[in-house]
Length: 296
Image 1 (cartoon, rainbow, N blue to C red):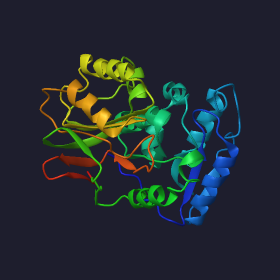
Image 2: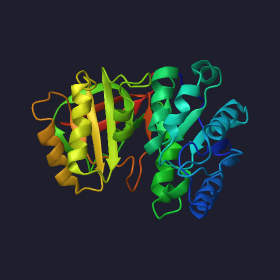
Image 3: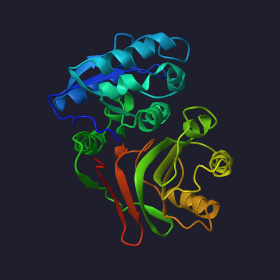
Image 4: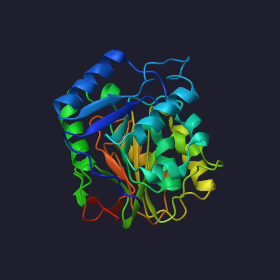
């Protein structure tokens, strides 16, 4: 995996809106938090565009991503919010452009589509982390920002606190950490941008999806063979009682022989612990360990 340069206070973060429009007031609050932490901000020129349920047309959203990615003063690209629309960009992205100028990409939810492109088509490390609109202008800023800054600096190794993790299936496994929002992942199966989870530690999360939809999406992953050779699963069902979710996952994956844990605080959660997709990861349920480390 290609490792971008680490990002620290004093560096410039480019902000883009590749999916849905955002709440301007929350956006301003988030930007102020980033600035107080010492980061400089460079806005995409089209971020305030609106096109129905999208933050501008495909060309406008694409221009901001490509322009800021090529800007030598910008060390990281952070999405303002998710929603819907990132998939539209995929056919227009050229792998060679992003390999030439590696930048750290940060976002979550609908931005899973871009994570899969960067991780599997470009082969670059990305951060599944908080976004400007909504993840910083709240009381959990300190936790969100503390973990984000630690992971943005691309540490050699990081061990996550696992006190609240629930175990759906015991075991130990290690592999490259990948994944994202489950609904986006299953939407890309059968396209040129579908992921390969063989020998990987796979993080799956979503929010407020009824159990039958969780069942349907997980079943699609299983029937497509995407999880057959996974080394471990980390699953977060935001919006559910954690024990109810763990019971559902335990029953769904009954008989599997890989470590499976639930209730990890990432994705649509409060707080939100940033995950470095493309790092190596280890899950050891018996010793209650979840750690990541550089692959290069």
